Image: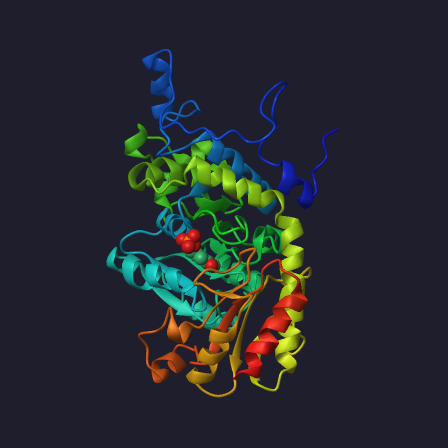
Length: 428
Ligand SMILES: *Cc1c(COP(=O)(O)O)cnc(C)c1O
C-alpha cells in the first residue's frame, strides 16, 4: 500500500517518478512547442478537453514536475510555476480580483509586493486596504467591504520579520466569504504549511530558499483546493460561469474545487501575460528543493545563534527574530513555526545612520546585497539602499529606522558569522 511520504522524502523525490529506463533526474524540456499527429488532437487541448502541452508560454513538463513537488510539500491540490514571486502574487490576486474589486492585505509585507498592490494594481482598478498583522478580529472585520475578494499576508514578513496569525486571518477571511492567500516564501513548507492552518492559496518567491543558491528568479502558486467558490458563485463568477475564451468551460464544474483556480490562472493569465518560468530555472529550483529540508535547519540554527549574539551586544539596540524569547512574535512563532522560522533577522544599532554605515563597511564574511534567503550570508542597510531616497523622518514613519540592518544567515559556520559581526562592531 502506498503511504503518504514525509516532507524530507517529498523534497527529494516528489513530483517526478521516472518509468523504466527514463532519466533519473527531471529532464529539462527546452522546447517551445509540442507535436501532434492530427489537428483534432490539438483542438482538444485548446478546448481544455484533454490535458497536454502545446506551447511553453502556458505550460511546460519540467515546470509541472517541479510545481507538483511544491504542491505536495504544501499539501495542496494543484500548483503552477511563474517567472517570479511578483508574478505569483499578481496572478494569485488577479485570478479572482479585477477592476472594481477590493482586497485586504497585511501591511507588513515585502516592499515589491506592497508596490504591486498599492500602486500598480491600484491603476488596474483593484483597491487594497492594509491592516496590521497584529490587528484584532474586530479591526480585521472592519477592513472588509461587499466587493472584497481576497485577504493576503506573509507567513514571515520580509523584512519586518512579523509572524502572521494565519488561523485568525483565515477565520476572518472565511467569515467574509473570501479566500486567504499566504506568501510562504520565508518559512517554506519545511517550517510552515499555511494550508494546514486554514489558508486557501499559497504563493512563493522560489528565488529565495527554494532555489537557495541565488541562481534563478522564480515563483509558485499552490491551491489548497478547499475554498468553495460555488458557495459564493456570484462573487467569483470568473470561476463559476462560462469562460467564452474556452467555448464556455466552467472551471469549477470541469476541474472541481481542487483544480479550478490553477487551471483558470494557467488558461487565462499565463496565456495572456506569459509570465512563465523557464524550464532551465525550474530545474535549478528542483535542485534546491532536494536539499531544502536539510538547508532550512541550518539556516534556522545560524539565525538563532546570530540573533542571540546580537541581542546581548551592548552596541545593538534591538533584534527582531521570532526565535528569541523576548521577541514580540516568539509565542506566535512557537505555534506556527515550531521547528524554526528562517535565517533572516533584522536589528538596529545604537546611534545613527553613520554607525550602521561603519558596521556594514567592515563586514568581511557577510556580503552587501539586496538578496536574502541564500546559501551565502548577505545583508542590507535599507536606509542606504532600497530606501535611500527617504529622509530619516520618512524612514521612521515607515518603521525602518536609519540604523536598521537586515541580515540573512547563510549556510556558513555560525561562529564565522559571529566573529565577522564582532570585528565589524568593534570598529563602530
Ligand atoms: C522576494 C520576495 C517576493 C518577490 O519575489 P521575486 O522572485 O523577487 O519576484 C515576494 N514575496 C516575498 C516574501 C519575497 O521575499
